Length: 133
Image (cartoon, rainbow, N blue to C red; front, top):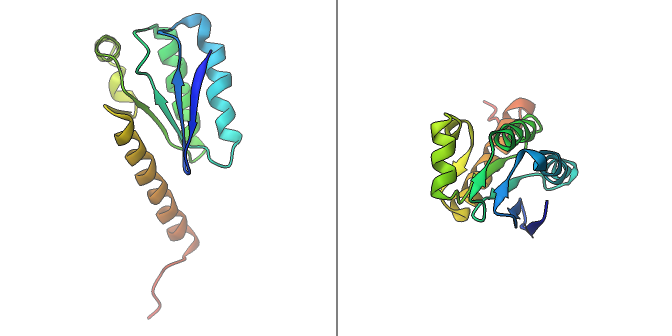
């Protein structure tokens, strides 16, 4: 799978170059996206602005990848869905399972908010930041 990669301070933006995500591409999708879980910066924004068609098998794979990211304390946000892709996901009752934003900028905001939330939760678990009194 060919992708454009834009690396930011706290996340990577991955934009597939192809116009379709098919069942035959699922292994490629998994390899490309899961490699980011091994990086220091693991948060990912998947920009699907070029994708005009998506197959159910590819959607299932993306959901599993999203789950793997959250299980590893990393964000996975999908953005910029084409209307027909959004309609397909909605008809299949899968849209609500994704962390989706309309724009890439909003996806960045979600990643940054989740990062702050994780830092806050880590502080609570370790007892840092608690007031003594």
